[in-house]
Length: 161
Image 1 (tube, rainbow, N blue to C red):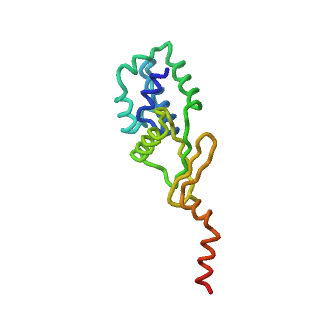
Image 2 (tube, rainbow, N blue to C red):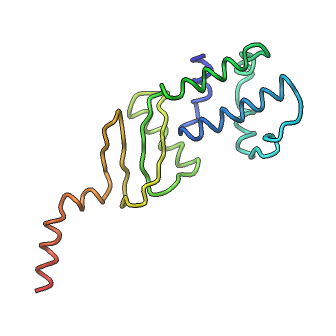
Image 3 (cartoon, rainbow, N blue to C red):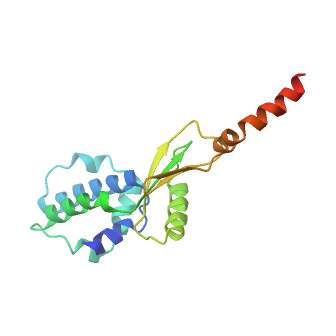
């Protein structure tokens, strides 16, 4: 199970990306083993198809008709147990930016299975806020302004006199 998860997480960095990839993997495997019409296959992006094609053959050999549901269920149940860094940003990162953020955070936290839970916070100014193990830290300009609010107001008052 860990080997399958390691392969999936190799270039999967966010929680939403992980859930999406597990959905398309499940859809692809079910079509492979049980055939039939697959409506989701029609809506796969080129990136999704490329990701599925780049999974090693040894990865696909771990699945059989008898174990596919159990393996996928176990993978989905294991998601909440992954080390998760919640990252508040003022924008939704594209795949390239997400890859860079994911690589840096995995190296920084020395955790190859670290997953990012990206959330939008349009009130941040030029920075990021993080939640790690329940501790919130705001590293944005907004927090710097808040911490020096009185000093900033005093500076403005000098010009208003």
